[in-house]
Image 1 (cartoon, rainbow, N blue to C red):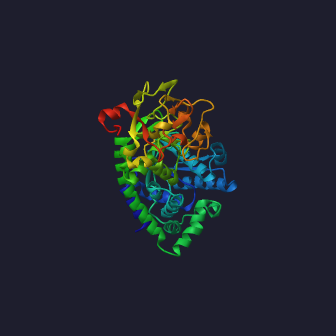
Image 2: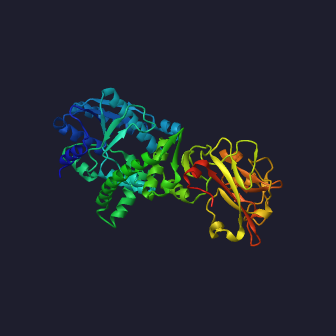
Image 3: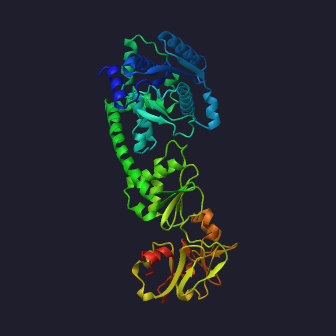
Amino acid sequence: MKLLDEVRETIRKHSMFGDGDITVVGVSGGPDSLCLLHALKALKRELGIALHMAHLDHGIRGDESRADAHYVEALAQEWQVPVTVEYGDVPAYAAQHKLAIEEAARRVRYLFLGRVAHELGAPSIAVGHNADDQVETILMHWMRGSGLGGLRGILPVQTLGAQPWWSGPPLKLVRPLLEVPRSEIEAYCQRHGLEPRFDRSNLDLTYHRNRIRHQLIPHLESFNPRIRDALRRSARAISDDYDYLRLKGLQAWDQLAQESEGAIIFPLRPWLELHPSLQRQLLRETIHRLRKSLRDINWIHVEQARLGIEEKATGARITLPQGLFLFMGYEEFVIGEEMPLPDLPLIMEGELALKMPGITLLPGSEWRLTAKTIEAAKLPRQVQDNEDPWQAYLDLERTCENLILRGRRTGDRFQPQGMGGKGKTLNDFMIDAKVPQSVRDNLPLVVSPSHIIWVAGYRIDERVKITNETRQVLHLRFVKARQNQRGSSSVN
């Protein structure tokens, strides 16, 4: 297929332009942008569009980049296409925002193109990304551990406006050359007598993309000469899969996610019934909504969080990017910044005497602590594998009838079970157990007149554990009032 036919088909398939549109064309002076401009100029009457060239001197290559700007200005005059040429200090922007030069150049360029489009009332910006750029991007994302969203590669049509660094109204970014290989672009330039500028920075192997272009892809071609076509086919298939799963993910989001004051809450039981693919999607969506400035969400963070939700105890905290945390609650988990968990039993002040046996209500909350005694011989076998951090089985004779419930105090110590009777400060234990800072003061402690016997949600004291000599067992369990009402968490 001829290049113009390929461009025409890509534009039609993705509805890139509307009749009467002004389109800003980003023109660097290199072969891709020159080919793009020439092709759109040839098709503009058929497409019903008007063109406006835009060129940004990035302030990186000194005299060479200034010569590029002069070249584009002369070309615009020769081809009778209006043009905007400006200078942007990319190194200064990179230093100010602590970005790599490549990322800073990308942002500054799009901000410039967007401003030009806004001033002209143009709904779209056309750039010259080609099929080889697509292959390089797919490999970059794959090596970074991207999910399906990243493995789609470059999208033919993208909305500029969702990014936090974007300063103008939403615009359509289109890539009419995305299905055209670089070799065809270079041949097109030769065939039409175009003389593109040469950017020697494209040979600089200190740039990650250049190493992929000049070293990795040729090596892969030694295994599969058609590796570029194979990767692009994969990207198209992944894009369709992504769109389908994205739809399913948004449906699950509407059913499960609750947004509240900079945090997002999910009910634990329905979450655990989701397919892992949907769990990953919802985690990515959550991080994206809470941290829109985060461009790439790392697979490792997502997978650690997903597995942690299955494995971590209530009260545990999982670290996510850019100051976000995942907090495990009793019936739900929360993703947000440091905050008290909404569904933990907490002691706000003072102390409460436990009713033994009986039910002790936690004032101002739905939580209650139930206490009852059980013959050791009648204990169910699963007691030794107790998976509920909010219940404890204790040797009744080693506890005391006068138990209280309170929060931590300065100097508190206890002997965590499993440490062979070795004592530890409560503060050190909470740090080691990764108890969230925000709940440490209010985490309920069951205390006898002499010592702490249970740090609720985490560990009992070694001195009250059940042994072969235990005859009577004290069973303590925190439950919510609404759980008892619906009968889902009655005490056994």
